[in-house]
Image (cartoon, rainbow, N blue to C red):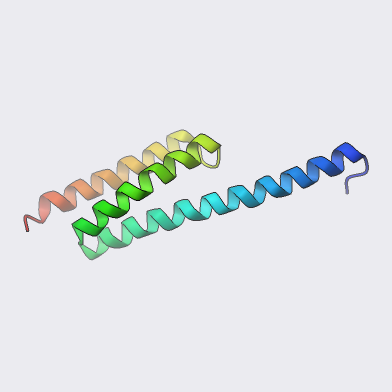
Length: 92
C-alpha cells in the first residue's frame, strides 16, 4: 500500500493509465476480430472495409505504447496478406 503522497498519486495515475490502455487494447482486438470474421466468411468487401478501419486503430495503439510497434506492423501485414489472398482467389 502506498504511504507517501507522491506514491498515492502515482497509484492513481497508474490506475487511470491501466484503464485507458485496457480500453485501447479491447478496441484493437474488436477491430481485428471483425476483419478475421469477414475473412473467414469469405466476404472480401466487408473484409476490406474492416481492414481499413483496423489498420489505423492498430497503429494508434502502437503509437500510444499499448502494443509494440513491431507487433502492430506484423498484425497489419498478416491481415493485409490474408486479404490479398482472399481477393486473388475470389474473382467475383
